[in-house]
Image (cartoon, rainbow, N blue to C red):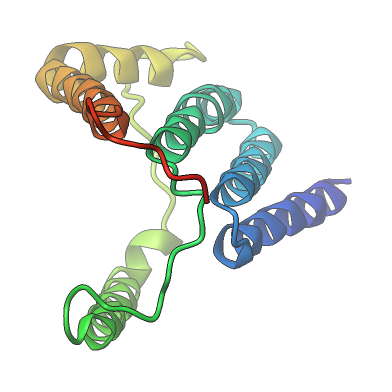
Length: 181
């Protein structure tokens, strides 16, 4: 049964990821991203990480994808654009170079960190937690809301600024006509 769930979730993830890249319509690509994120949540449940699965569905499949959809619809990027014109000369070569460099960094990280993946640690639970099954969640909450509260709040402010900026960019100015595609 575990193998069946893994194969089904993997197919969901792969089909969704391919759909994100292949789909021409941005809304359809965002919906393919939802499929990918739900597949990852199923894998979390299969690994008995229900908290992470819930966070995956609520935060990523819910809030972040809805934010993507708002940006897509407010900016009107669902219209077809001419892809042959390059605003920056040589941007395709620069993008290819950056992509190869990132792939090289990924391979280097995998090669140098292979021994860290093989060993399995105890997580963030300590000896003080004992048999408490919620020790990891409690320690994670304590860490996020005490040690990293500034980073957490700055991230929320950044997301609000992104939404406000999107609304301002999409707003029609006085005297500007809307041209239908």
